[in-house]
Length: 227
Image (tube, rainbow, N blue to C red; front, side, top):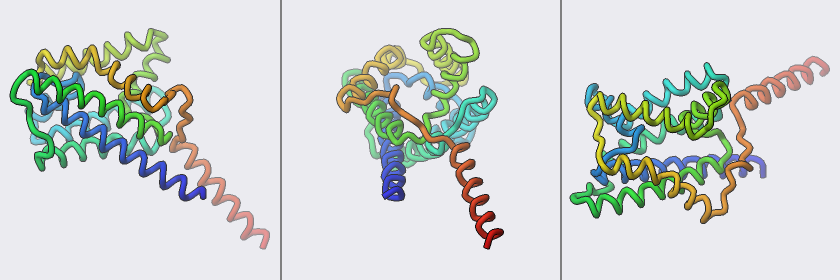
C-alpha cells in the first residue's frame, strides 16, 4: 500500500506539471503579452540558442541554487518542476499542439484558460506534497530573511524578472498587465473548485529521504554485524 501511495503521488506530480506547462503555453500563444517570468525566459531564448523551455529550465536551476543559499528545503517535486515543465513546454510548442491567437479577443480567452490551467496544474503538483517550485521557494526564503510582506516580495521578484526580460527582448503587451493582475484570481478559483487548502500541505523533502536511506543502511549494517 505504501508503494502504491508513492506511485500515485508521482503520477499526480507529473499530471500537474504537464497541465501547468499547457497553461503556460496557452498564455504564450495567446499572443497578447507574456507573464513576467515568461518575458524573462523568452528574452533569454531570443539572445541564445536555447528554446523558451530550455531557458525556463536554466532559470529554474539558478533559482534552485539561490534556494539552497537561502536555506530553503527542496523536494523531488522541486527538481521535477525545474526539469519537466520546460521540457513539456518545448514538446507542446514543437508539435504545435496549441494554436496561436490571431486577435485580442481570442487571445484573451486563451490567456484566461491558460491561467486557470496554471491553477489546476498547481493543485495537482502541490497536492503531491513533494515540494513546491523554485520560484515559490525564493519568495518564501526572501520573505523570511527580509521580514517584508509576501505580496511585496512576490511583486518585486516578478517586476525584476519582467524588467530584465523586457531589456533582453521579451514580449510585453497588454496581456502582461492583465495576467499579472488576474492570475492570482484564476489560481484561487481553481483551488476553490477542488477545496484545496495550501496551508494543509506537508511536503516531503529530499533531506528527509536521505536521512531515511542512511537510517536504513545503518539498520542493515547493524543486523549483519549482529548475525
